[in-house]
Image 1 (cartoon, helix red, strand yellow):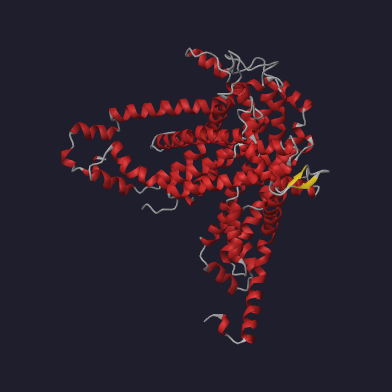
Image 2 (cartoon, one colour; image 1 turned 90 degrees about the horizontal axis):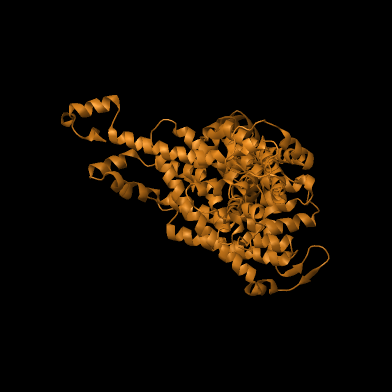
Length: 306
Length: 295
């Protein structure tokens, strides 16, 4: 029976009772709530307001309506940044997904020392990007006898310019990203591999499937939800890459590594165009949301496979 | 494998091979596996070993191959230079302080809110829950600019409040802890209530002691996440003395000093998370698999 059919007095009493029952729970969520309202909800709403202003946060604040959104159409650096962002995702996501899966299959065998190898592969992932940038800036130096060029020299490949070359800089940073993250996604693949029930393999063998055929018909279909998860997460990460670019190339050479997030950062903090940067942030949000949504739909994230 | 076949079809040779555990094919496969994993392990650990070695080398301007992995003489000069020329000591303090408060605060608030969402029946519960889910899907980089503007309006740029604030609550943590509370049978709550405990006592004395491993997992993940964050601490600090270690080291990397100084900085930034990883890797890997399986 719904409360609407009760007489008014009883209704009020029911409401009072419900409020009294609710009250003791609010102290448990109040801190969470305050943090989210102050650091997420408020900035998130104010972003739409700021996006309609031209402001440097100091002296200048001028209402410009939708100008900041119109301006994007003519911002050639933005177009390049978006191109670079998608290119980076292409250079980063497929190798990362494939490498982490292959390594997971490798370390999933019942051999001595597997735990050790898993930990070793995870190490770059817990190391912060500033440390990795400090190290790899030296490794990727264009000098002939810098580490990578020295190793290339051993197999007869001439010295490369890596971060200083407009065609190699983005790929170098993607490579560093793959090296940093494959251990993390290896662990996720591994959890999925180990969750496949052994009887399914036995049944497959009874049906005459061995080796690759067994993987083709048992492993791969069962890994699809994990594959969807890994693809979506790595893509969202790729679209937001920043640290390595900021430290290693500063968006250069000649804007070759200026990605969407770097462009937003630079518009805000190098040119103090905070209104425009807010409008760009809304664009970034929409792009990520749409790509994640499409991938979700297409890869069928939540489908039951068992 | 062959256990499906009747025993009688096994040749004595097969039985012998199975008994001593040697199969030529398997042996080759194992060798190839170890070779691949070894190469990968060297490429993973190698850069860190070179980092350590260069940081202990005297007067090293460039990192050029081949190098001596064990420097002669071993020196701490680079570290002395790092502390003398940069605010590395201050950055380290900042990072530890911010990470510690963020971790404790985040675990604490997650445990509280997770309990309320798992057990509570209060007005607005579902609305709040979906609001939290909504925030979870917001890409954090899209919020960086408005967060900076807000902090700048409040005069909080270059403050610990700004560095710690968003880390004082965790949506992932709240959901994780909610799952953990749901996994405890309600009988515990009921028994405690019959004994006269209120919901606060039930939370603190009855349920929380059972969730210490989950809290440790969450704490380690939060510590790592906070220590390694870069973009947010970069934008909310403009004064050198308020930078966290990764942000400070980023400025060292961009300033183009010599290799020894760079690597000393890298070692300093590497060691804390390495130690936490060594001590807590069981929890970390568990936490990561958990987040992946949940989807």
